[in-house]
Length: 273
Image (cartoon, rainbow, N blue to C red):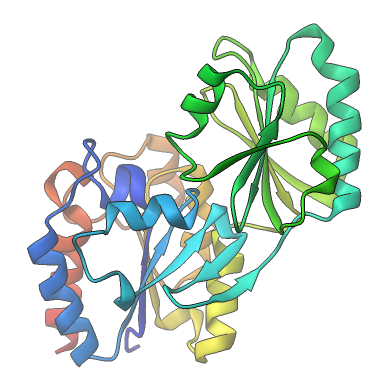
């Protein structure tokens, strides 16, 4: 089957641990992919603004971005697809948080298309920490009065908190209405139901008329699994944890520190030339 689309996760996959990659090599591959009519897609949990910073020395207008773990798909000109959390759902989570957080205070971030929103009660230190991940941060008095499409609700507890317990309770509380996932850094992300990197690729499949079996994807972690299982040619990184290698048998030709994604793409393009 001819390859028509290549998608890659960023952290632990395309990017080295210091958040860099071989820009010249990547731009050469983009030229070759253009020649072979192959789309290049970046699929990440990051907001698109943060993602663009990683590619500021590359040719960003030649890429398409699945950001916020699939809640939005865009290029540098327009939003192609979005899956926001409704205001009613936001209110339900805020009410749940009010009842729960008394045991341990947390920070709420509403990540929208235009900006990230935090409470007026957030301290300057909190704002500074949030700005490391969100280029534009706005303090608001009432979350429900924010006029923006909210892609992700972030609930951030101290790093020593066991967020797995919060994730479990949120999933029990909201069932299939919302998609809840956690990290090891005290953060819980809440998205619209059935939102992940696969749904972003499925949107592009409809828009571009590209079949899943004509797609390649690279990933290293559990939030990549839906995407990897969706495409016809999935690659897990050698540096991924063992549970990922058990689920996806095909590995990239090198780990993220040694440009494994670029190395593998080169071989795929050569085989298809």
